[in-house]
Amino acid sequence: MAVTPRGTTPVPPDARPRLTVLSGPSGVGKSTVVAHMRKEHPEVWLSVSATTRKPRPGEQHGVHYFFVSDDEMDKLIANGELLEWAEFAGNRYGTPRAAVLEHLESGVPVLLEIDLQGARQVRASMPEAQLVFLAPPSWEELVRRLTGRGTEPPEVIERRLGAAKVELAAEPEFDETLVNTSVEDVARELLALMDVV
Ligand SMILES: Nc1nc2c(ncn2[C@@H]2O[C@H](COP(=O)(O)OP(=O)(O)O)[C@@H](O)[C@H]2O)c(=O)[nH]1
Ligand SMILES: Nc1ncnc2c1ncn2[C@@H]1O[C@H](COP(=O)(O)OP(=O)(O)O)[C@@H](O)[C@H]1O
Image 1 (tube, rainbow, N blue to C red):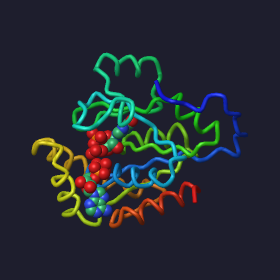
Image 2 (tube, helix red, strand yellow):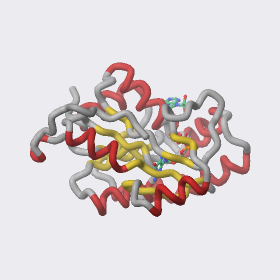
Image 3 (cartoon, rainbow, N blue to C red):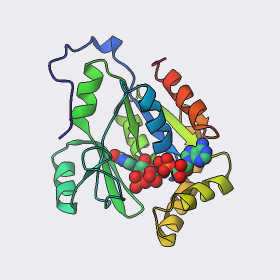
Image 4 (cartoon, rainbow, N blue to C red):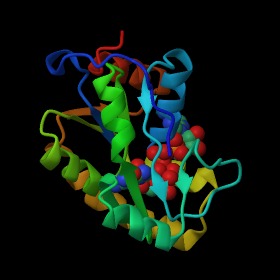
């Protein structure tokens, strides 16, 4: 399903990078920060999630997401192929387990960009993971970014803003908080947290 570093020698467990999870409300800038970070540091591996959401213009299967049907998602869940999964604003999303573990075993730093429910599941199953919360500079700015992106109709934006209130309230559960005022600054801070720089 995913490209994995086959043929590489596993590194000893105590030398493996920590799994890092990045969460935060829809529209805060997670994808923007991650894209900026990976442009400079392509060695960070970003897990590609499976989702039942329909692709946005420009999104490619296997690059941004594995776009799957409801039946396919049912099977991934039933077969235990997902490290975590959650329903978010009417669609299901999940992290393919095998590729994450293979990359960590090969010593590759791994980043998951997932929602709060997924972050909680990772905390429960992999307590050594590092949970990072990306916060907006203000509520007004979050609304501006989500609306300004122009990828969702008004009712979907409303639903995502409802979820955002819940996610913002959960910020104290995270190990670290980064405020997304400047994409460059946050990307640098995230790399430092991942021990990449
Ligand atoms: N639990 C979980 N959440 C995911 C996964 N992939 C993406 N998400 C989250 O699902 C939410 C919606 O993602 P998406 O539809 O791409 O919208 P966007 O993040 O606002 O661009 C975001 O909070 C993502 O971080 C996953 O594999 N598991
Ligand atoms: N630091 C920032 N300052 C201003 N606009 C930003 C910043 N980070 C992201 N954006 C913009 O906010 C919108 C939402 O960003 P996006 O990365 O799609 O968010 P998310 O992946 O968290 O849903 C996009 O239009 C993006 O260009």
